Length: 468
Image (cartoon, rainbow, N blue to C red):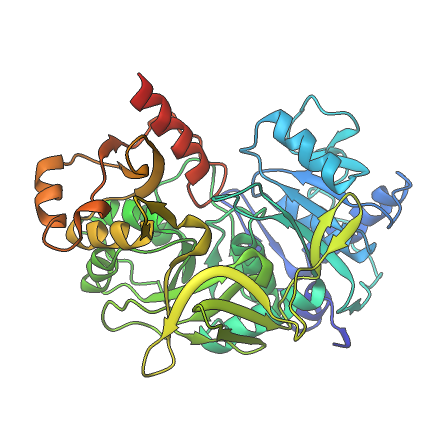
């Protein structure tokens, strides 16, 4: 990979007066955004921040956050994006793990070396500058984002600019995005799904629309002429519940990802005329790996591999990936660990297969499987059957200790359900050892730090509920 244009610098040249970022209160053109970034760089230089250590950012989605990111990147400083949903102690541990030099936050937090973003970024500054943003080395280290941690401890994933650039380029080739389009920043920037929206929009001069903290999704789409949005299953479920008789005519694309999407939910969306694209991706590959074309009907697959990525299955049907979007490594105490095989393939831990048209069908995860009474159980098999039978927002199966069988499956379901009815239907589709022993309602007080629910936490909750 060679030197590439700075996404913002390139957009400034081609789309200077176009709106780059839109909020409910104001909008910044690409020219105004560039000026704000340059002024932020001048302030950051006074803090004597070196390029040797990452700088942590803890913030909700905001214009100020994006400006700070761009400023630090152009100073060749790695930005570590920390979830605002994390407890303070988890934040401290993650900052210590990446050896962060300084922390910027959108609010006061009880962590040493933390500073407010508002002290660096001033979007009210209208002074124009003739300074230009430099081009970026595609091999330059850019971001640290943490894996979901749905099955294990979250890992800090280091990406280069090239990783993000080619991720966006491949996405834009498959899912059309144009200069006058508006992509809603509906995912947090501290996830690669949110971060990818910035790179995709800047490549073509589209607008990033930042919603207020508490908003009605369907009404916001209509009121702001949103053309593109990225959603996880829960967000799509809530959108469909809130549409009623509204026509979302401005929408050109809804990119679905994050975890499995119920086919019944996809069918409901398609019946309403919504433009649905399904995807399969992961943090280590800077978001999307495979994505469908715009769907005409519900499908189990996640489409074909996008440009600048490669994918294959090993002898155990585990999905292996590589390409120009593949991360540089896991960042641990200033050192990189890159677990690749001798040919440069990364083991995703996901299990899948290709259909007759070379579309990828993801069937489960290796580390979610467990053995009950000597029989292998894949939680996703049980979850997928129930999701297809019922339109539940969330369904997760986890193992709990059992004296007779070693472990037995238990299930958490969001929404009202009839256990006896579900068991009766499962008995027609599954052997008895795969029928969950306990059925629990989804924990109302479960704080979901990640886009994906934590199976580890749900196991702990299940064990407590059984003991009680």
